[in-house]
Image (cartoon, rainbow over the protein chains, first blue to last red):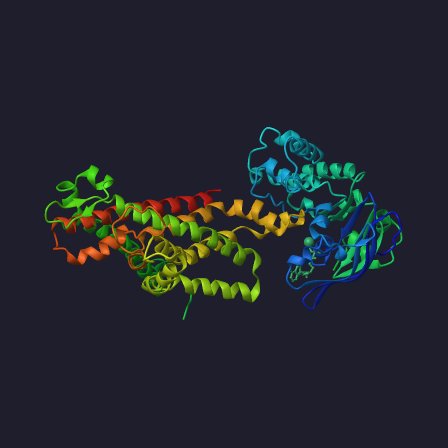
Length: 255
Length: 305
Ligand SMILES: Nc1ncnc2c1ncn2[C@@H]1O[C@H](COP(=O)(O)OP(=O)(O)OP(=O)(O)O)[C@@H](O)[C@H]1O
Ligand SMILES: [Mg+2]
């Protein structure tokens, strides 16, 4: 076990991620503090999604993907968790495009608690609570038995957030959640996230630098597999930056 | 030489136009001829068997009597109950064996095996599906028969158990292939989303993949049943082929299909026996058609969603 400062939820040390020989993230090191939103920004292909996948060890199911260095969650290296499934249950993931499982609205949110052996009526409570926290309850409370895939794109995205919350995670990973969502719904989800960070540490990968600015206390900038800079979000936008490329990116002057 | 497109080009029929035309006609002819052949076969079977249905058939006897004695000099009877029971018991037994085996195999190949193992297994399963039924019959006759006699201490090993096992082994590869296709059709995103939630591999398969592939899996089973119903040669060789209401797995039985195959050669075209056999043909045709249609409707059910 690596000793870390008490406020770090996740510590990344010399992390290198490869697909075959191709390193898509090299020697990244940074800390993700507890109970705040940590932003990751960077252009396409810079390794953001790969980092999230390494964090909940989805690399196990990606042929050719290998991870060196360490990621610790609450001081314990994720690679050393014997029970991979227990690790993943603590980490909620929201994918860029909502993946509504071929289940009802209720079934989607109830799946994870069910896998943990929860039964009705506790199940009803948790489904309602999670849908409320994801700001979806009022829209779907009359159609809990409808197929999740029949909801609109923005509703489905909130459904996947509710599903992630049903795991009662203490770490929530969001990968470009607003890619298929209209601006109004995006704002609603952002409000939800601000509320959630009191209880959950959130890692927010986003292509919208302004979204990172609105939400994240600290932000990392990835570029072509390099973690260029990590700092207070406001610093990246207005203060001094260590690397001029960071400022160029956040101000949209790139390439 | 000018390449300017004038209005004349609009009506000039070039090679591509003709090829398109010809291909269209050929494809249409191919499709139509398949339908024509099927209708033709159906018409023929119906015509040959209908004389019996109209004239000699006693409907109650036909469906409720276990006595199939079409060649009796004194009083020929045409009861198919024993034959139906034979076919149904063999098919049922076969499904009992092949459904769990092939679904298990499909899940292993589709969800667990990777790389070389997976490819090798798929090729092997397809090779199994290509074994001619007479070879399976031969296995029933010369391997299973003595084996059953030895193991269970019974006088003959040509029985429902033997035919059911053989038929189960025959149906399994096809069912495995179709079931595996159904599992493959489930988007990987579902698996990934469930895995990311901390579901174990087994939970992912049981709670997400199988429900999503349900229709395809049902279709696979139904096609296996259809196969069992229609199989002739292997059943003829392994079942013992004696008319009998089966009471246990060691009873020899006789199947509808095998009856037609074995007796048709002894008949005189057009006589009552000949027509009765064709009536069995109509029945088989109808049953298989219903099973395949159901399977097809079930598969369509998936696509609608
Ligand atoms: N399964 C894989 N096999 C091989 N290479 C991969 C795989 N997944 C991603 N990559 C490569 O890794 C690099 C980083 O990909 P990643 O998905 O982490 O980028 P990203 O920062 O999330 O980009 P985006 O903003 O477009 O989502 C890319 O060059 C990509 O082609
Ligand atoms: Mg990405």
